[in-house]
Length: 155
Image (cartoon, rainbow, N blue to C red; front, side, top):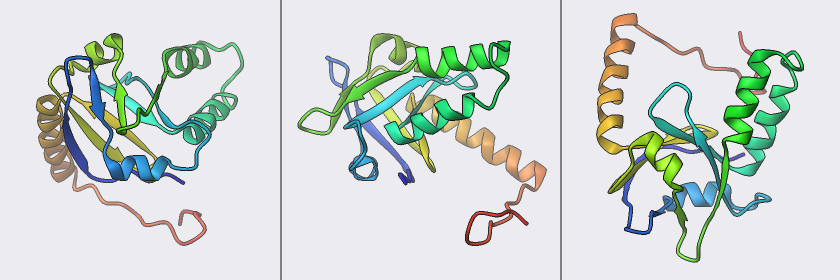
């Protein structure tokens, strides 16, 4: 299982190439597609990204929704029709397609933000603002997290 942790900011070159953090590439090794799959976030000015294995699980989860429902159609369109496979080049870089870069306002730098089994790609300034707001919301709410016991069952 791929696990993405931490935040890395990397430079985007004039051709739209950006290096995927080495730890993220290592987490993706051994998957059926050598690269990442990315699509526009429907909640944030960012990209959602993962490996092929996680994307297959997301696709299977869409089958849990009512077939032909609006929710199923909308999410399938966003996540599947809107996703792009971005292969690694020999230097561990991907090329960010213009439509994805535009959605996240990524120009000179990209922030790779670990989210466990997925990660996001942000404009670094936008992510810094979001991170500050998230910290404020968590403090206000007094949010906590219940740790799952081994095996994944919740208590």
